[in-house]
Amino acid sequence: MESHYMQGLDWLILGIYFAILIAIGVWASTKRKKGGALFLAEHSLRWHHIGFSMWGTNVGPSMLIASASAGFTTGIVSGNYAWYAFVFIALLAFVFAPRYLSAKVHTLPEFMGLRFGQSTRNILAWYTIVTIVISWLALTLFAGGILIRQVFDIPMWMSALVLLFISAFFSMLGGLKAVAYTNVYQMILLIVVSLVLVIVGLDKVGGIQALVDKVPADYWVMFKPNSDEAFPWLPIVLGYPVMGVWFWCTDQSMVQPVLAAKDLREGQLGTNFTGWLKILDVALYILPGIICFALFPTLENPDEAYLTMVENLFPVGMVGLVFAVLTACLVSTVGSALNALSTVFTMDIYVKRFRPDASQRRINFVGRIVTVIGATIAIVLTVAIDSIKGLNLFNVFQSVLGFIAPPMAAVFVLGIFWKRCTTRAANFALTIGTVFCLVVGVLYLWPPEWLQFPWPHFMLLSFELFVILAVSMAVISLTDKDKTVYEIPAPVRGGFSKLAVGLWTALAIVMISLYVFFN
Image (cartoon, rainbow, N blue to C red; front, top):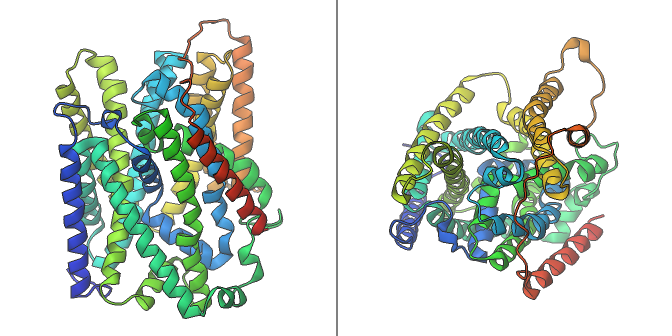
C-alpha cells in the first residue's frame, strides 16, 4: 500500500496511534461491569466524556475538509453553524435533558412513546434507524472513504470495511463506555494537531495582522446581507433553529452521551463543555482554509485546502499524525452511530415488541449482532453511492437530510411544550409530514422544467416547512376526538447546579461578544 503523502515515519506514527487507540478501548471495556448494559455505559459518563463524545460525533473528516473549503472561499461566515449551536445545546441541557433523564429512557423513540404512545414509538424507532444508517454511517463512510482512497490508493469498499471494523470493535467490545473513553483521546489529539497546523500556517503568513491584510475584509464577518446567495443572515437566523433542535436535542447519536450521564449535573456540565469546544470549530477548521487562501490563492479546488496545508507545511511524521486525526474523526462518528443504531433497534424493537423478558446478556448479544448487520448495510450503501457517477452525491444527500429536520423538530417541540398535542398529530408529522418534506427537497434539488421559479434559500425553506407542520399539528390536535392523555415524567428537580448555570452564563456572554466583534 503506497501513498505519496506518507513516508516511513508517517506510517510509524499512524501505527502508534492505532496501538494506543486499541489499548484505550480494551481498558475501557474492562471498566464495564460484567454483564452490564452496552448502551448507556451504566449511567457513568462524566462531563468530559459527554463533551468530547458529542463534539467527536459532530466532527467528521468531511467537516474538516468542507470547513477549510468554506474558509478558503467565504471566510468565517460558515462558522454560524458552529457558534449558533450553543443556543440549542443549552436547550438540550436545561429543557430536554431534565425530561429525558427523569424518564430514565434508553432512546428518544422510547421517550416519545411515553408522550404519544406505542404507535409513535414504533414509527420514530424505524425513522431513527434509517436516519442513522444513511446520514451517520453511509455518508460518513462515503466522505471518509474518498479521503482514505485518495491517500492510500485502496478501493472504496476496502476503505469502508477498515473504518467500520475499527469502529465496530469498540462499540461491540465495550459499548458506549469504550466509545466515550476513546473519543476523549481522539479529540485531544485532534485539537493538538489542528492547533499546530494553524500556528505553523500563521507563522508562514507572517502573523495575524498579515493574514487580515491578505484576505478580503468580508472574510471576517459572521452576518452577511440578505443579498448574499450562500450565507444570507435572515435564513440562518430563522432556519438554523429547525436544524439545531433536530440535531442537538432529538438525534439519538448526538443525545446518547447525555442519556448516559451520571446525573443531570454532569449532563449539563458536559453539554456546556461541548458548547465551549464548538467555539474551536472556527479556529481549528475554518481558519486553515483562510490561511490557505492567503498562502495559495491560485488553488483551483477549494476542497483541497486542508490537504494542501498539510502537504506543504508539515514535516515527515506530522503528516502521519494528521491522517491519524482524520481517521480518529471517522472512528468517533461511526462508533457513536453504531452504538446508537444498536441501542434503538434492540431496546425499541427487539425488547419492546418481541422479547420484553430478555436477559441483559441476551440484549447485549442482539446489540452486537445489530452492530454487525448495520455495518454491513452501511458498506453496501457506501459502495452504491460511490458507483453513481456524475453527481456530487455527498452534498446532495446532506441537503436532503436537511429536509428531515422539520418533522422531528415539530414533533419534539410541540410534544414537550404543548400538552394538548395528540398522537394523531405527531404520527401525521412523522409520516405524511416527512414524505411532504422529502418531496419538496427533491423538487428543490432537481427542479423539473415546469417548476422553474426562484426558490427561497435552503435554510428559509426549512423554517417554512417547520411552520407548516407545526400549524398542521395544532389544527389536527384541536379537532382530534381522541383525547387520550399520555403523561411524561416531570423534569428532574434540584439538579441545576450553580456551577452549571454559571458556566452556561459565561458561555452565552462569550458567544454574544464574539458575534459583536465579528460584525
